[in-house]
Image 1 (cartoon, one colour):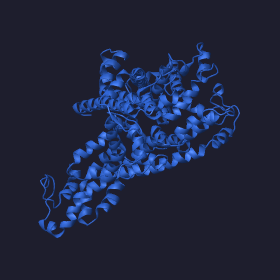
Image 2 (image 1 turned 120 degrees about the vertical axis):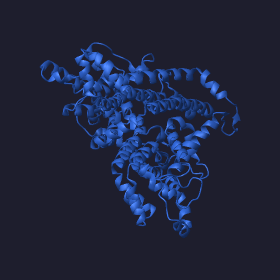
Image 3 (image 1 turned 180 degrees about the vertical axis):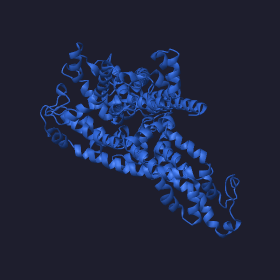
Image 4 (image 1 turned 60 degrees about the horizontal axis):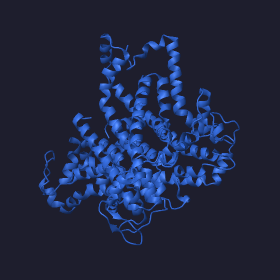
Length: 286
Length: 326
């Protein structure tokens, strides 16, 4: 009788109750997806001014994209793609290396390292924005100026406590026997890491790739403080500069929004199962 | 523990340091050490080599900035003139500066209202959409889309929906329902609430998904037992569902509060803190002070205080988790 907290099994037998439920579901979808669907239609709608935003384009056109392209849409998109690719690669590599040491080794100072990594999760860009922009302008010892370069966005995103912890929790579960057998056979450290541990971590790799991408694609403040000229903007930051155009109104902005929306949407829809498992684990345990 | 035994043996291999020979490390033949003394010393470095990339990145982009921010917060930072030590004066200004105080007030209202709103809506959605039917799965997946959408996109889209003219999309809708037109973000008295609504819209589906995971863990027999004793739907939710979800809700609320306290992008995109500072929050103020006004000492002091507040909340939730063992 009670499959759910509400115990709504009876709904199936009463047409009125069923209809009510369907209406509620429809309302939920409209409220949460409606605004995003409006982006889809608006991006392809000629003269999509706010008054005419709707779910179906009145006058389908690609003009919005052309206007946005003149304002650098593809350049911003390329910036975003390069940052997402570079930062994700770096982040995943850094995380699996660090997780290997944390999960498969015992060494002095381990507890301290764990605490140090945990502490970084309390130092998001918001908290350190001001000094971070100074440090990025002149890296201590190296005296490099990363402002105005994509590396200035990529490098700070390279270390992410969340993916280190997800990875290391997973690696802890791998039986020691596998590793010891390889060690007896004289396998080197890198070989054990690369050929034994890493291939077993594919599910966790999926989680950190998907969450890493979503997190990097969502960045706003970091690219904003790294940028020296509007040319350095990522797509998310550049949206504001597409806001109003004399010829297509908010059309260019909607074209840009669509482009910023699609990659994260595609990743979510393609890897939904992995996404949900990581989400629940991350919220309740991490 | 067993999974680590191999690592233990390697890390301590041949190193007759006080830390060597921990329980669980399988004994190694002594000859091994004599034959390869150099290699075993190198092995102690192995974990550090693997950790090096992460630690270097964290050092440069987390710890050094944090230390520098803390240091700057005690100075009147003046380019070209040299910094002047002023002790805690910047911190004093945080609490006396009129615009900063109102920004702190807005932040508290936003964090509280957004957290509560998202939690209540998320809870209702979770109850509504719990179940194994395919339709429900589709509706849940669709409702989750705002969570994965980049926050800047969310902000820009809602700016358009909130278009203040009576032709705006929401105003058109309001017109059909017989009220409005609203000025939304242009009205200093209500702008903050419209900003909060966007956050509720974005975060409620997240709370919903986590609560759904919690609902799945509740023993169905509790519901049956409550129903047999004649408990109504509301009584069941109040006495069975909510107590079972309490740990999850506590964590969600704390994390949402922390997120709310350091909110930046939503507000920056939607209103930039306007109109006339009506939606200014701590982070937009820090941004304006640091990057527009160049008042780095003041901005740093405010950042340090923001950090301390989130630190207290984080420690609280960690202690709570430890005690509950979740």
